[in-house]
Length: 204
Image (cartoon, rainbow, N blue to C red; front, top):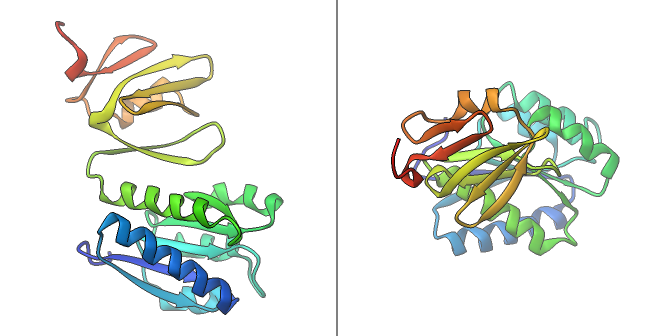
């Protein structure tokens, strides 16, 4: 695995102008977060894969000459199952295929600078939090919440509502799967439709 003291990032895009702009946004985000980082740039997916190196975060263009970003991401998952992937794309129909490779986020090409910076900051939070709960919302974006900030989970129809100190989210999952993921010492099932954080239970 990459050096845990340093967040390692790969930028993969065939356009030098885009790589340079994405690099600037990465620098801005990591300086805001005050996290040590190292960035490498690749002009093709083939060169990126050939290195056979896991990265904490990969910013990957979908539409590249040769193999697409989706194909490159599929190959990369054989190298790293846990590294976060943010796809850069102007191809909405292609972005739907990215969920097969567990993509963290999809961002429109560089015209969405603020959105990309926000996605990178979210990725940093996921990487830094030791007790992070990671899930997909209804829009299939990945959300990361510290488990200690979660008040409770409630099953509503085919969705689970995640209520935290900072807001509420809806996730695509079942209570059975949720039970397997939760740390037993932190959550308690008070009803078949509810899991609450033990810090919010006055008496059992």
